[in-house]
Image 1 (cartoon, rainbow, N blue to C red):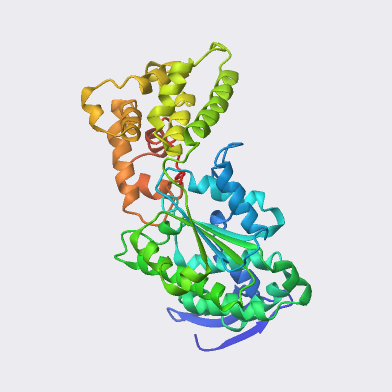
Image 2: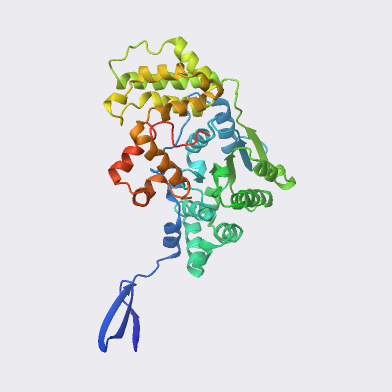
Length: 430
């Protein structure tokens, strides 16, 4: 290029003009470059919308009516400021996989109504686990609710767009602490003691990135508890996770203990069998409506009781079993079973060997058994290939993986069609 000029048009785009010499011939070219937009527009582009509470991309698990009632009542009371003490500005609810933590978190966030300000729902399986997306996603939700916060965070990002690529500590200062100092009196009053929910913290960060996921989770806990302890934060924080060793250790620090209410969602809660029974009653009612030919008396009380026993307090088993029983489409007719046969296959394991597996493992093995043999190899190859493409949801990788594996799109879809995707649930019923 031997000459160049640049100017801005009325739409805010930049037009770059230049003269190029190619093989002795000159040619002029104009390239229109769109401006990168305001700070808020940059924030919107990096926000992980799928990890937000109301995202259509999430199959958000919810508690059935009257299930986990005591825990929901307690955390909702705390979140609404009905407790006399305000020392505990962080609620950490932990429990093993499968007990319904994510369902409680989603239901709680909805029951809080206007007291809910923002949330991030981590999911490693769906690729919604990038630490660098965490604070921008929370900031976006706050910005669309509070005008003065939006103006402040817009100014921060406009001044230094690279803040969106900084460390968690730097982002926390720039996107959280600084904008909160600029709140109008009206917004400061409206935002006080509202809730930010962080669900599935143990899934933050790719598990195969050495110990980066551990560091990210510990950093988030430190930032949250430090903010709560310093009292410059107007928020209450709800953190939900499995009791991983490093998370337990992070919440055990003196500073964290001083501001945290530690709540355990146990595997065997006092009324968990009743909760699961109530849930399955509702599920079977829906199935009978979907299949009018099924007897109104199905399933028998004995069958229902056995299924509850097999759940052993795990909502993950109950919800996966329900999806398996209900989902009968997607298979060739010679492989298709009705809901009654599917329930029976759960209640009567076909192999002695399976007695050595947990009931949940038996359910997964049964599902795998019902994948047609001509499809099974492709299904297993796809599952393995998707595991080595970290941080991306399966549905986003279909064009890439199908090409890499030499499969047509129809063959690929057939290999991952029900019952595999219909059961068990892709959501971790935490």
